[in-house]
Image 1: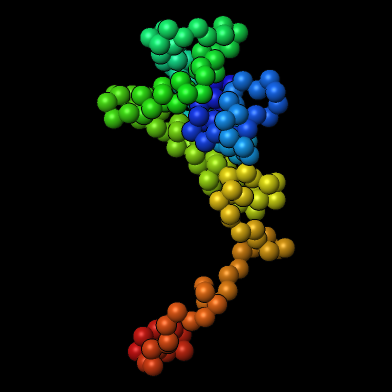
Image 2: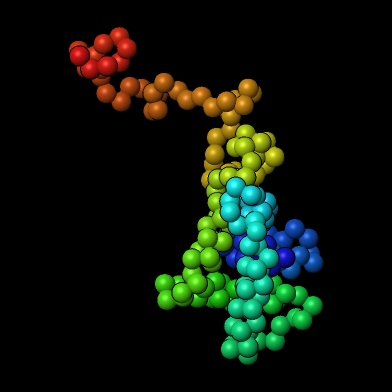
Amino acid sequence: MTLEAFADTIVPGEKRHPDDHAIAGVSTGGGAVTSGALELLSHPAGGLADVLEPLSMGLNAQAAGYAQAQSLALDEALPPFVALPFEHRTALVQQLVGPENPEKGMWVGLALFSNMAFDSAAHISTADALAAGHPGLLTIGYAPPGPDRLWRFEPASYGRPLAPMHPHTTASGSPA
C-alpha cells in the first residue's frame, strides 16, 4: 500500500474504489498504480524487488517524521505515508528527491520506476499493454499495432517524401 501511494504521488490516478487509501484520487483516469507500478517495481530485472520492503519501511519512517514535524495527526490504521494527505505526500517526496538529500538516489529510482510503468509499460509487451487498455500508453496516444501485433508506418512520415533522392544514390540506397 505504501509503494502504491508513492507511485500515485508521482503519477496520480483516480481511486479504484471508494475505500482506496493508497490512491489519493486527485486525477481522473489511470495513473502509475493502474499502469502496473508495483508489477514493474517487483520485476526481478529492475533490481529493486529485493529492497522493496526496506524502501517501504524507510518511506513510512520518513512520513512519520514529516507528520510529526508538521504536527499532523495520522490515521494509525494506515501506514504513515498512506495516511498523509496528498499535498503532504508531494511535499515529502519533493524533500526526498531534492538535491540536498544524501539518500535521494533511492527515492529518485523509485520515482523513475513509477513513471516508467505509466509512460512505457516496461514490465509487459507493448502490444499486450495496449490490448489491455494500459492507461499510460493510451494517455500519451501510443498507436496500436496492426491485427498481426506488428507496427507499420507509412514509407514517408508525412505522406510525402521529405527530400528528393540524390541523383547518385545507388539502388541499395547507398551514396555513390
